[in-house]
Length: 511
Image (tube, rainbow, N blue to C red):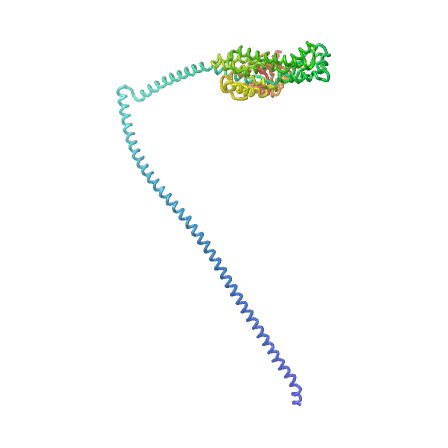
């Protein structure tokens, strides 16, 4: 039984033992294999770590080498800069040492001089004291008494000197007062002078009847075209009865056209050939008249050294007007007035008359009114050999240039006097009424003004103010402000008087 049991139980037990050992062997093999792989992995890791370590060491050494190079380079630069600064500091120190030595020497010298000066000052004080005592002994006066006498003497001398100075100033004022007064008057007249504005540009020719207009026009307009072409003017034939109008900025052309048309009308023969013949003859006559008028003007003023070309231009002024004032007559008048002023203030009479005659010569070559005639006249005078003084007189008479001589200022004053005198120029009724209204409007624009009246043909404006709003001190300021506004905003000949009226009325009743 036991044997059978052992026989049956032994194989399984044997299988179990063999399986156990077999599993144990397999496990050992697996552990051995894992350990082998681990060892290999560890070795590879160690190799890789050593490689990276070597690589890191190399990189670190390279970086350290670069940092060391940079540090050495910066150290060298810093050392060089420090050396340079050290040299400069040494130089400055040497300079300072030298300056200190110089200052020490000067200080010693000044100390010695100060000692000498102090010694001399003491000697001087002692000498002054001795002199004072000697003076007191000789004069028999004390220092205070002598001081009083000296002060009184100096006061008397100062009064004498002051009186002498006053006498000299008064004498100088007497010598220069007349000249200064005339200059002041000249500038005042310039400020009050009216500006030249426009000129007459048309001339009217009377006809015997309206049928003459057709003859002037001619067949298909050939007569009027011939007249306009030969004379250089515009002929206006409109509905105006028994009259035609000649229009041109050039007064000489207008005059030639006017005379030619009047002769053609009087003759009755009006055709292109006759028109050409008459205009040629009239042109020659007018040119001769221009020459004669220019020569006559120069001769009457006794002006020497005027070129023939300038004389021609002077003659052309005979046909020009401004505000109805003939410019040649105006130039003669300016020359006369300038000569009188120059004789009074001891200026150059000949230069003043010469400049006065030529001051408006630019109007003989400009056809657009006053614009630029002063500068144009100066260029013309310079072109034909006039002196620099005359050129400046012409260019500065309307302040286009600065006056460079007293004669130039004289011409400005004479020009203003001639243009501004009553009756010299005419102005239209509309302009006159507008100027009066402007005067009243300016005055009434001020606060406290109740009413204003322009009287004496615009030469005076009366201003009535409110007594409660404007007192006596303010009234003077208002009158001055009104006058200033009139000067700035209006153009007028002569001067305008501003009279401000402030009236106080007190009414009481006795009951």
